[in-house]
Amino acid sequence: VNKYLGPAKNAAMAVGNAVSGHASSLSNSLVGAFSPAITNAAGEGDLVKMRHFVFCACRFSTAAVMVFAIPLVLEVDAVMRFWLKNPPDGVTVIVPFLLIDMVIARISDGHWIAIFALGRIFRFQICESICFLLRFLIAWMLVFFGFDLLGVGIAYLLTGIGTILVKLWYGRTLCGLSVREWTYTVFLPLAAAAAACVGIGFLPRLLLQETFGRILLTTGIVELILLPLVWHFAFTEEERAVVRGKLDRGGAFKWLKR
Image 1 (cartoon, rainbow, N blue to C red):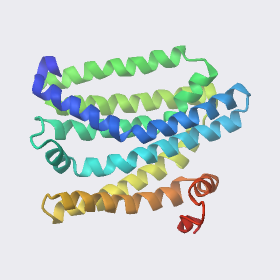
Image 2: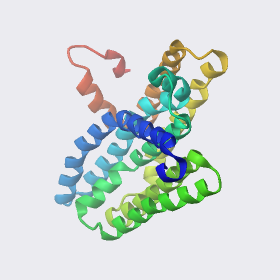
Image 3: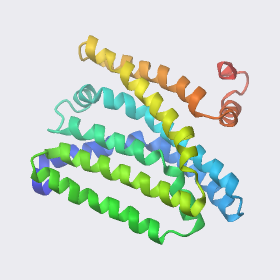
């Protein structure tokens, strides 16, 4: 970006990476919490337990990222202006792509932990590295044809999808992780929740002027839709019981029992 689009666009990339990093902090902690459980289950040869923790990690880490990513994507213009006053040129173009790429990475997070836990990583690492290297080639081609930072964002999106396919393939062949189960218990519920949040959360942008209050309203709408949908349709009953056990101490959060 710095070479072909200049320092101003490179500043936009730096801001986008900073936003993405802050938004993924909670998700990183959740993945770190699941990693020992997945590794221990793999070491014990209990592949059923390992698969259970893998899909849990995918659901929890993705949901945690969506809490921050969806409002940011919907209000990226306003957030950048309120935060930076004079945001770098192109920052509102690249930030949504980096946030979506972050969500894409999280939705198959558990798979790479399981693959590494089993230790058969050579071919997986080669294929994943090819996807990441293709990011440079695709971005360069799209920039060459005049797509500017939009081309870089598209390159992130395409190669992010490629890494998902790699993780799903090697998760299935090496770890016995069902692609069908992942699709129906992880991808579809979370994708449906995200689509509902985006569809309804976009309404304030259509009806209201750009203010800080609109950012808060959009965020509130997204969370009010996202959290119940994820709770009831993405999480399993066992996962809901674990969350209730962590939160409902001393009589707090009794609404989660419903």
